[in-house]
Amino acid sequence: MVLQRNNQAKRRPFRSESAQPEQQPVHQRLGGLPSHAHAGLFPDAIWMGFGIVLFGFGQVIVHAIAFNIKLKYFYNPGMVTVLFLYLPLNVWYLVEVYSHQTVLLWNWAAGFGYFAFFSAVLIMWVGFTLLTDKNSPYPFAPEELERWNPRGHRARLGLPENSAKG
Image (cartoon, rainbow, N blue to C red):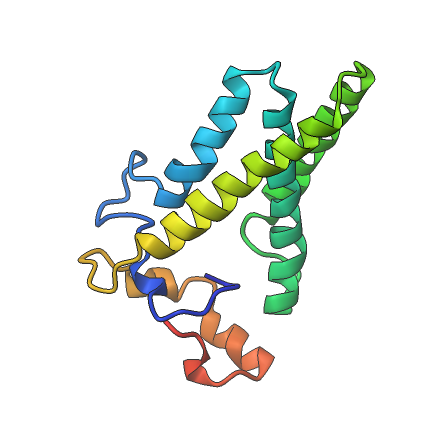
């Protein structure tokens, strides 16, 4: 919601009216969990691991760099996870795989395809676009949208009050 301005932000299919754990955000169910589960179920498929590594590096770029530049702020939710979980695990995976000298160019190519499919198609297109319903009966509650003082951040950045479309 930070990088994308769109009038549907309040109505994205992240959750229903109840905050039960089984009601995870749709984008996690469609892309995040299956892509990581497949890679875990098939540990010898190096290309799947590369897809997850690319996803992880993408998360580092988005959460540790892009969000902070966009928000002109030092910290954002998700930054600690990507810096202290994704980044070290990604580096460890690459060191481990390369130490066995089993990496071929096609592993990277297939890993990129795996990453692109789950990220662009399932998470971004299906989760954030196709399933967005401006008439959803389950919008985010106003207190959820006001958490972390977005009005104060917009004022600090010199943005008009109505600059966050949603």
